[in-house]
Length: 414
Image 1 (tube, helix red, strand yellow):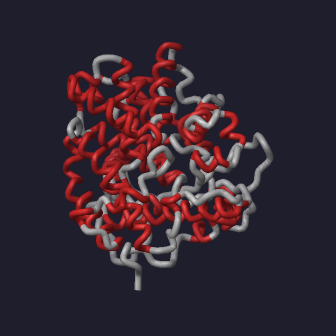
Image 2 (image 1 turned 180 degrees about the vertical axis):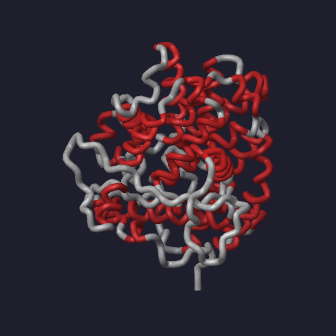
């Protein structure tokens, strides 16, 4: 029988070897190759192998017989674009069934929907090379991998697309910075939190002086990859345009640090109360605040999704936290409180109750005041919260029981 979170013991093969792969320092790309019997290592400086592709899937209106595999191609370019945009708008998209090349194609479709390639002279081959190398830096961790990176970009694009005035008034280079920042916001994530890296005196923590350690690393790594000649999709941007692009991308990545959450949401509410959406579009500084807030909220958007998708993300995150708890024990460090006891379904659910009540739901309500589209998902959030409360044994009228033990404030969470 499957456990109450709709998740059986069988997980995809890569995750069954997550712990071993992480301790071996493997990237997701190397783990895929090793699982296929190909080793996964390549000489320094040699570009990664082409992204694996999957056959085109049928358009939604094309009925496939039960149990049928992928349907043969035959779509026109326009049909494929329409299908890609439909997938991009679907927050419940099963990203785990997508090949990396599928995710790259959907990401490009998002840029095309806003006409960014045309306006900024973006070259598709360079974009493909950039995404390919970016994805090659995804380590074999349960949660913070390419599937999560893409999901944050997808939600960011969907939220902004719901208000045409935003896309119309924000300069294209800033929109591009927002989307690429969202895609790279967890690049090369090791599966540990900032607090753990600082406690271990990890070289990254020393490099960034214990300040937004991972976020600074994600940002720097993304730009090192982007600025390689073969990947530099923004090579043709004038200096001032590039600077605007970079400022937005950096803000979007750094503001995913959960230690900034309450300050970010307080300032966002003040800006909304002071001038609404129109006021947030007036200056470059205010637009950076808007765009980076959307990416931050996208980073914690799992409770907005269907139960099957949300619960799977929740389990993957808990699996990753369990490995950190084990690493903390091995290092002789105190166990992070909200990572303790996650072998229990009830404890996992209690962690989610606290997170949804303290962080996610208030954030969605705030974002919904600017993007009403978010409010359409409110019933799903409440349904998900009710189910985790039931699993956790938390009284719905006093759900704050989950708040005290698993707040995640001041640390990196989802």
